[in-house]
Structure formats: C-alpha cells, structure tokens
Image (cartoon, rainbow, N blue to C red; front, top):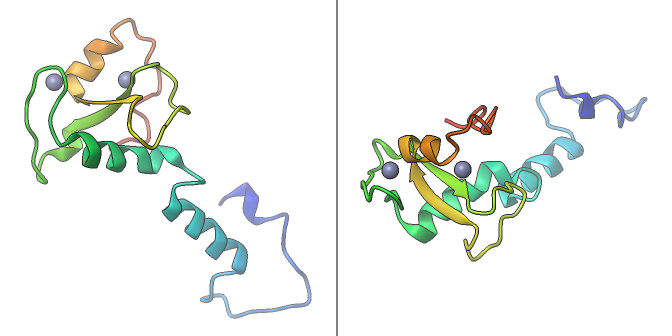
Length: 113
Ligand SMILES: [Zn+2]
Ligand SMILES: [Zn+2]
C-alpha cells in the first residue's frame, strides 16, 4: 500500500474498484515518462545511448543477459541524470561492484534487477 494513496480520497463519489482513479493514472503516466522515478528509466536510456557493453571490461550483452549490465553514475549522484547520458556509464555488475569497492554502495543495488 502506498501512503500516497490515502490522503487524496474524495468521499461521496464511489467508483467501481476496477477503474483506476485519476491519481493512479497520473502517477502511472509520470512513471512512464520517467518524471516520478528516474531510477526506473535512466537504465533503459543509458543502455540505448551507450549500447549493451560494459565500459570497463568491454563485455557485450544481449537481451538475454542484459540484467547483468547496470548503469553507473560517474559523479556518484544517482539524481543526476542528464538526458545526453553524460553522467552514465554502463558497467557489468562485476565492474560496477569493483567501482564501488569500498562498501559505499550500500543499498544501491536494492531495487535493481
Ligand atoms: Zn565489466
Ligand atoms: Zn555506480
């Protein structure tokens, strides 16, 4: 349950529960546009921009093992996602881990596939 679901409800206006509310739709659209969750979208953008290849070890990836290719933020700031991809580097999970080798990574990989 998202906490954002509960505070904007309009009483006295029942709707069938299989029809998503306008808030839900707006949130979905935002997500699809990548405005609400850049973390969801920058990876696809970076893979499309830079190609499915690790920038360090030059290992190439395919649709089958693309989940092993991750996006590294060059300046370390995962909120910095310029559309031209200048802050992204495609790294395989091994190189990526090495890049963050001091354990600073913390929960960086959590929520990624
Ligand atoms: Zn690599
Ligand atoms: Zn990284």
